[in-house]
Image (cartoon, rainbow, N blue to C red; front, side, top):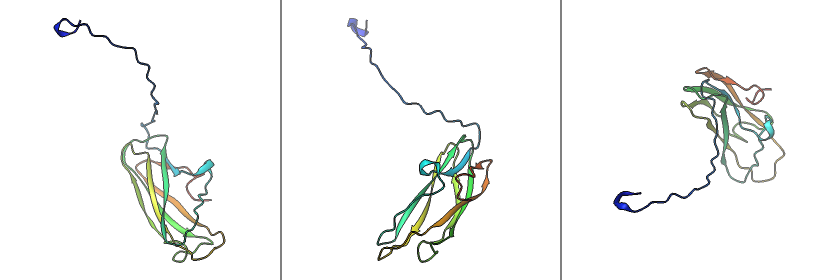
Length: 138
């Protein structure tokens, strides 16, 4: 009985929860988040400049702060004409699982053939490793 002599009733309620187990006792493995685990991301050029957001994942651990250096490299796409060259260091805080690299893609006034450039993940700090199948290298 509840306070004041009134009976209280608790209904059985079925509940579901989705649980994600994070292996957080290691610094993790860093890689680009790409469709079908391929090392290629397709971006369609537009008529005006725009910023492409490239997702970097931290898997198999999230313990401690880790850093990864990155840079862009021209291929058939040329820096300054097709994209703006960028380089820097992406910092993942303790338990952070995703980060982004922003690259400005230059607009084209007309149809252009398929061009490509690379973003490479390089030196890591804090104990993280690179997934060499998806770090932008060959």
